[in-house]
Length: 172
Image (cartoon, rainbow, N blue to C red):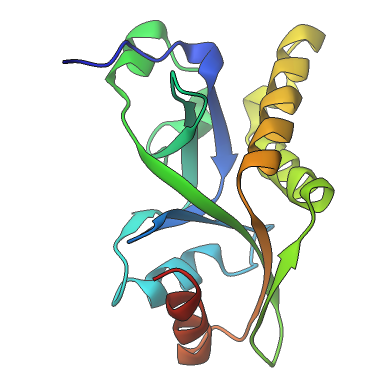
C-alpha cells in the first residue's frame, strides 16, 4: 500500500546535519561553525550520515515526523507539490544542539529551548524568512509540535572520538 503524498505545507526545511541511528534520525543543530557536519562525519563510523547541511522534516499522516536529506534542495526555496510528493524520510528520534567545548557532555533540554533552536535552524534557511504571516505561524506551530514530541539535548563537544562515543551510547 502506498502512502499518500506529502503536502508541501507539511514540510519544514532546517539548516542541520543528521545521522541515522538504530533508534531513528538524530538531528544536529547549530550555527555555522558549530560542528554539525564534523559531528555527522565523526558518527559515520557507527551511524550513516543522512545529511550534512540541510534536512526536510516531513509530517506523517499519524502525526509523527520523518527526516529527509535536503542538502541539494532546501536552500533554493519552497518545494513544489511534485517535489514534495517524491520525498520520503526516516523517523525522527532526537534533536541535538551543538556547542563547542573542551569536555564532552550530553544534557537534556526543555521543550522551550528545543523549540527555540529548531526555529533558529528553520529561519537560517532564507526562504522561510520571506514567508507571510500565515505561513510563518504554520512553521512555528509545527516546530512547537516537534519540540513536544521529540527530546532535545545539548551536546557540548570537542570534535573528537569522545563526542562520537557519547552519542553512540545515548542513541543505540
